[in-house]
Amino acid sequence: MMQTGLIHPSNPGCFYYLPVALRSLEKLVRLIDEEMHAIGGQKVDMPALCSAELWKKSGRWELMGKEMFRLLDRHNGEYCLGPTHEEAVTELFASQTTMSYKKLPLLLYQVTRKFRDEQKPKFGLLRGREFYMKDMYSFDINEEAALHTYNSVCQAYGRIFDRLHLKWVQVQADTGNIGGTLSHEFQLPADIGEDKLLVCGNCGFSANIETLEPGQAECSQCQTGKLTESRGIEVGHTFYLGTKYSQAFKALFVNASNVPAVAEMGCFGLGVTRILAASIEVMSTEDAIRWPGLIAPYQVCVLPPKKGSKAHEATLKAEELAQSLGNSLPNLKGEVVLDDRTQMTIGKRLKDAKILGYPFVVVVGQTALDDLASFEVVCQQSGETLFLSKDGLVDLLSTVETI
Ligand code: ATP
Ligand code: MG
Image (tube, rainbow, N blue to C red):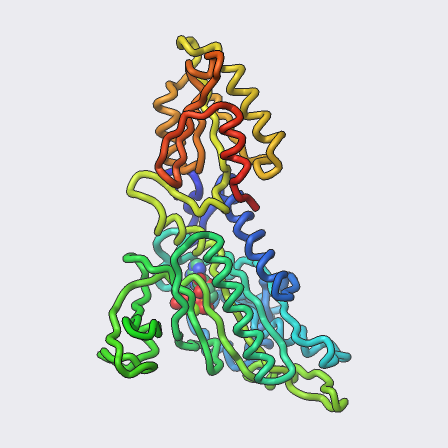
């Protein structure tokens, strides 16, 4: 990502997101928004600057240790830069004095920067000290309803990874310092993954190794299958919290019998910048980036011929093509790049386009000037090269999914 100018390193674990990467990140956020809205999620934005008081109330001010970035304001008030927002959101809920059971479930989420002073920030965006997370918090009337919400969020997470065409597994997970009683991680299988997973060959049960007995070889669910080890990148984590935070913050609602009751909570994280980096990690080759089609920064790159070459007259054709694809196909609005660095050969620019991983590269050369004009189309996702007429090209590109 650094070599291709997607990101630029700042201090350890912090990055500049450059324009091309930011397009992809914004698409990923739109995809997440769609799936969160589909299950009733409402987007909010909470302060990154969180007062120590909140964290002392839940007992996590001490517990978070060195991972928390702490600071003082001018009055010596203690603060942290939010690593997660259970405390803040629960206080927000608790401050609503007229919370009726009729308003539940309430699902609030945000996509914001999180700050964690990781011991070893590494692998670029995979483990940053400042990174984007989508964190959702749910409030329900009782355990049954909270578990229903829990499952519905897990299903939405599955849909997000399916729409990105990524292989994923949902594994039994540890609740760590967030707490609660039930937890899953969403993992992308990858050799560089830092998490060790065990998957049952018989019933499909999967778990993070941290949750099992050391050396456990037999499945704890079906008791017959053998567990095999693999590695994964944790891209999402879900927790059923019960009343751990709502109790401490008096997050109450008025139930159907008109009596105040403590809300049941869940919390659900997706590592937005980690998903971006992890999907590039699992899809790319040593020397070329590949993106999940839906979040590729641009869908199409059009290459006009080199200035002064024999095919030079096709330059105008290339410009028209780039314009008309972007204008006539609604899915390609803003998605077509014209690589007009025509002092460079087509070969050199094609190489760049392959490295950057545009799903479609259209070469406008000599054959574009023939009576039956045709274009060379490199489909990078499938690896095919096609020769298509303008109509053929439009048909092909009209089916491209964008967000
Ligand atoms: P890890 O075990 O990798 O340190 P975590 O379990 O501490 O992560 P959670 O608190 O579960 O992380 O955060 C929710 C999600 O945020 C994670 O599933 C992951 O995708 C993402 N995430 C966590 N830490 C980082 C980080 N340092 N950089 C980028 N993304 C992160
Ligand atoms: Mg986690």
